[in-house]
Every structure is written in structure tokens, then in C-alpha cells.
Image (cartoon, rainbow, N blue to C red; front, side, top):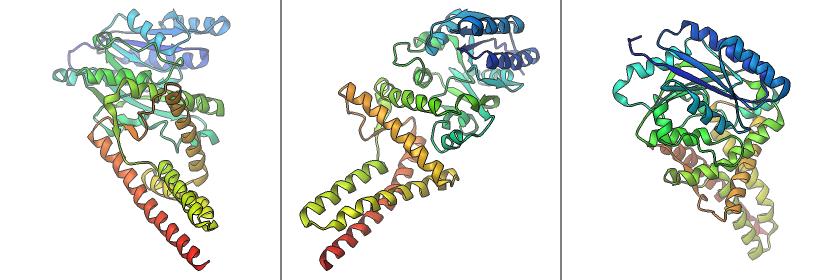
Length: 378
């Protein structure tokens, strides 16, 4: 490492997670002892009460962390940590992770080796550990965890999650820190903040050597996943409105194409009175599902059709909550648009949708031709 000093304030928001906090602080203590690149401090911002609070306070004393009592809002807790921090770099960690040794050095090295890039932050890798329950196997077929290993794939990112990510404190202050006036107590604010950092002219550089391990336990329940789906679906609407410049028109997805095909089949039935068109609706539905599964499995190399189907139901629920917010706000400008961060993202999105559209159109035309032939024969 160079002689450049990189001091970190480590901010950890939490609520009712005494065992996790103890585990995390223990892992950070070991990394702090071996870090020679500068000074560090830990700030726990907690909204627990009674025994949970007392236990977390004891852990803070044991591992030299500062305890701050905070409100029941993750984004407000993070802002309190920023305001109360003493150092120029803020490292955010979730309370249900543990850190791999060398985490601080890995983040610091990025700043040290990129002095001319005017960085706004650094982003590391989050890997999951613990039981792979039925719920988790379904989650693996969604895009819920796509951001957790981005640092392995890209040198820079335009948005991040709120864990294992550091920022230059001045950048955070200059852009107004985390937006507190958003619905729900958490969710979506990390994407919003990190994109605003990049938009202000300060890149976020990745480091695959900074690793945290996230417990699957806090995801392994139906309620936990349903709550995440509700929050993230609704927050997509609000983030889209805040960053409208990212919303780009693209090819329609399979649900829209299926809806259009269904409408065409119903119109054909009304014109011809042939029940073949009605029976073709579930056929088109099955073909739509098979096309989606085949294309997605090719990309992800995951081939369990049951988990895939349940993941798609989660996707329907996600879309429902997004559309619900559109309805409540009398705003349907998001229809036909997706959030696109850069050219590479745009090309990948277009390619995936184009391939599905091609197969869907071929299948649909074949079904319609068969229906017309049956109608003529009848």
C-alpha cells in the first residue's frame, strides 16, 4: 500500500439483530487490527428497545463501536451515521453480514490507486451463506440478488446496494445524503443515492477483493420475500420518477405480448365464432412460459422449472405493486419503459427481449394459422 491515508467511518444501521451485530462487530474487529492504511471508527445506529438494545450496546462496548439511538428508518439511520462520522470515507455495512479479512484494505487500495479519477465511492462483493431453503432457491431465479456480485463483473457501476459500499463523505453531503422522504422505512434509497453520486461526476469503482458474507436467514421466509417484493416494486416507481432520464423505451416483454395475443384471439373468436381461438389462449400462455424459461435458463444456467415459475409469480407481484403506485399517482408514463443505466445495459436488455419476441412471434403465428385452418375445416 502507498503512504496515502484512508480513514473510514463504518456506519451500520440495525434493529433487533443482537446476534448478527455481535457476529459482525467481531469480524470487523479482526480486520481493523490488521488495517494499517489509516484510522477507523464504527457507528451503530439502532432502533431496538429493551433487552435487544441493551445487548447491542454491550456489543458496542466490547468492540469499541459508538452506539447511537436512531429512528425506525434505515435511510435516516444512515444519514445520522454520516452526520456523526469523523472521517472522510464512509463505509456502509448491513447488520446481517460478516466481513472477510482485508475488506478495509481492499476499499482503501482503490482510492489510493485512483487519485486522478475523482472517485465518489468503492463497491465490493457480497456473497451469501447459510441454508439454501425452498424460499431461497426460488429467490435465485429472480433478479433480487443481481447487484450483490456486480463488483466481480464490472470495473465501475452506476448504482449499488447499501452494503459493502464506501463513499467520500463530501460527495454524500454535497448531494444531500440519503433521501428520507420516500415511502417505506427502507428500500430503493441505496440505488437512488449511489446513482446521484455518479451523476454528480464521481465514479464508483469496484473491488472484487472486498468481500462480505450475507446471511440467508434474513431472507429465508415467505414474509421476508413478500415484504421485499412489495417495497422494491413500489420503490421502482418512485426511483423512476426521480431519475426519469434513465427511463428508456424498449421492446415489449412477454407479459405484454401475451396480453396482445390474447386480445387478438378474443377478437378472432367474436368474428368467426370458432372456439379454436378460445382454446388457443391457454396454449399461447403455455408457450409464453416455455419461451421465457428456455431463454432465461440459457442465460442463467438454472433449469428448475418449478422454482422458475414461482419466481415469475414473484415478478408478477413486483409489477403489481409498481403499477399500483402508478395508479395511485395517476401516472402511467412508465408503461413500455425500463431503467437503463448505460449502453451495455441497453444492449443486454434489447438482446434478451428481442430473442424472446422472435420466438413468441413464430409460435403465435403458428397457432393462428392452425386456428384458421381448423376454422375453415369446421
